[in-house]
Length: 132
Image (tube, rainbow, N blue to C red; front, side, top):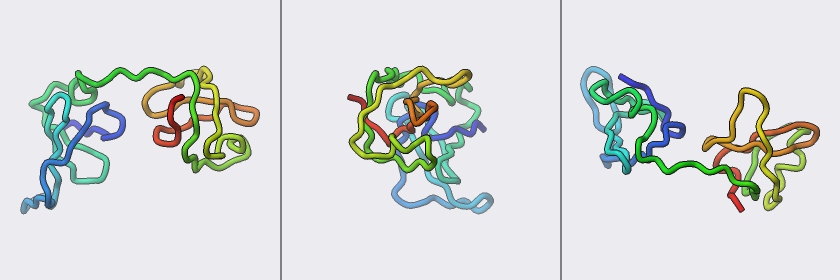
C-alpha cells in the first residue's frame, strides 16, 4: 500500500460512497477516486489515502494529468492564521504582497508561496491567499 497525503499529491480526489463502509477486520473506510486520472484508494484516517500496489508508485504519489502550478508574481491575503512578529504585515486580510524567491532548500509550490514578512521571508499556505 502507498500512503498518499490528499493535499500534496496533486490528485483531485472525490468521495465515492455516501456512508462510511465497514469491514470486519480493519474497521471503517471511505473510497476515493481521482477525477483526473481515475486512481482509486481507501481512506481510513483523515487526509491520508491508501492506494494499492497494483498502481505504479509514481502515479500514486503524483497525478499524471494534474494541472501545472504556476507561481504567482503577486498575491492577496484572504485569511492568514499565522503567529509571530515576522507575520505582522501578512495577517491583514486584503493586503497584497510580492512573491519572493524561497530560502535555500525550499520551493514555491502548490502547498504555499514565500513572501517578505517583517525582517525575514515567510511562507503563506495554500488557502490563505489568492493570486492577483
